[in-house]
Image 1 (cartoon, rainbow, N blue to C red):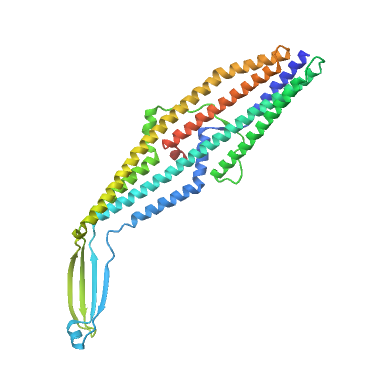
Image 2: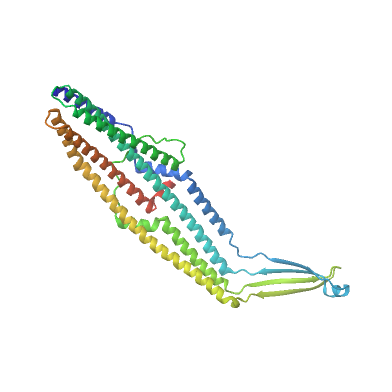
Length: 419
């Protein structure tokens, strides 16, 4: 009987090995990069951000140096003698002279707005890239857990067969078969739940990529995460490449340009004009040239209030920039710590926990075949192994997710998506 049961265990190991040998696609950084590029090329949020950037680009050319000239036409209603003497057709032309200081300030403001919109588009790409990376990793983790649960079901079904053979012994108890059938039903339901969750992740990924149907196939996590960069280097990358910080810097430049424009507006405006009087009978009477200057001192308080408003907005933007830098630095340290912790956890499961747990399962199963251990001990050992395998995969997935977040926060997805 013991020899028969050992043969069943050999068959069990072969079945589990065959189940594990599949053709899953490994979710490597290059694979994620390709999916991010696909999403960026078609996602409507990126298209909307690009349209806003194009609008801001057009706004730069809309800043004018010369104002439109003003043409005036008039006629005189008077006696013939007076009209002949002074003219009865009046033509006037006025032109405001360029305000170069105001023009330069408004040009700088429009340019800063266009650069801010470009940075905002990059931020949209980075956020989309992070969402794609997290979703594909969740999908890969679901596939890994489904594979583990499927292997466990193969094991349980084989154990059920072995328990059935043992039940033929007159001295055996039917409790073992009932416990196994209960465990099998529980694990089958857990597997069905994982498969439904996988459908959810796959649907989300397809929507992000703009695909009509799922073409990803079965995925697997990459067992070799990238090496972590030190915190100082990552902080420097964040400072140089983070699109959110870039957008806020450009907004501060625009606010400074707005303050400069407000100062230019309080200066006098000079315009020149010419006016002619002509008699409708065809005789030219006179021409008058004029220079006009506005007197802004009457609205000095209004201009001062406008300057104060612009400077306050500039200071507020600089304050928001400093606060955002601190928040991003905090996020950076949190992500680095999370990546390190999950890497250590993954290594611990791979090098210590799993080998010892697998040995414990093997020893307990052999003891059960020899009637030296109970079924409860076998099931407990197998649950511990399954939980340890699942936790190892979760730690690996969390490590990759932290990597994707670090790439996004330091502007790495922008370079990837553009390739």
